[in-house]
Image 1 (cartoon, rainbow over the protein chains, first blue to last red):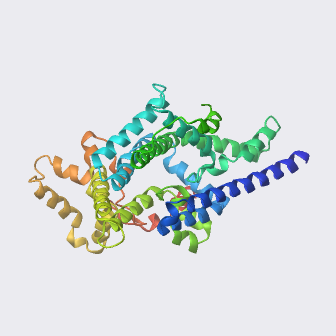
Image 2: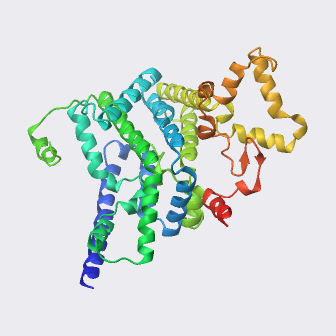
Image 3: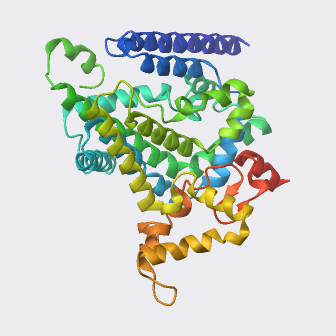
Length: 233
Length: 174
């Protein structure tokens, strides 16, 4: 009972602060110099916030997950084809921004290659900026605005629940639930891997574009070393 | 900012007018198609004459539209372009006498000066995409020709395909 009370309290606190943080981040973004001048982007931010603030019902989430697993689970050919996204949609988006199709492909290819090399342990991130960006991604992705299915699995309170219940006798329903989670994780491992490559390479390509467009250069400034050092730098 | 993935990608109308669970089920596994079609529409809209964008921005949007459509057609064939396969299938269903599928193939062969009696590599390439020449089946996975619910470019309109994947799965299991 004591554990349950504390667990519920922590869950409510975590949910409250996650939402408060998201709201604050959205407000900051909405009021930024660039977006405050663009009603179209403000509309996107508002729509996104409204959508994110409405939790998905468990039934819808469960059925979506089951269908994805049934039709796509274990299908490595489909997951590999999913890896063409950056070359179809990502490169076109960069062309819209730069007007240079060949340059866009080069940038996408570079980003995919860099992510692949780091994943395979063949090299490190090519610049301190890239490393900083990927560290930010790794630390923030549990609250990713775009991760629909993962939001529940990545919930810190669920991890705490697992830790509290670990080693205790479990009911048949709990065992079945755990087994289904594992089957799903295994079946969708190819998709998740390719999606991670897509996401990281999209972030790198967009980041490099932003820096070249805005003329932002990496400078190791003393006042930036505080937050960076907390990320292992 | 580009609203092409996850929750940000969801159709506002569907999620605002239906119960959320129903909308999620209907939207299931359609994220890529909806996102890509949305991206194309956005590019076309930006490249269209008029509006607030500069001529350079419009020109870039047109280039991006051409690039996206060309790459999609290159990987999945002409019928893999959004709605193309469904449109052909619907016309075939409505007017079977036109034999539009067969005639479209014949027209493509004519375009490349090929015929059925010989190999037809160029028209096959146009219809099925470049990877098909290497034996890779990208078309069935990347094609967005079947974007209309219930319409398959191979089998035409099928009532049991109208349902979203989770309902089809339940149908299949029971």
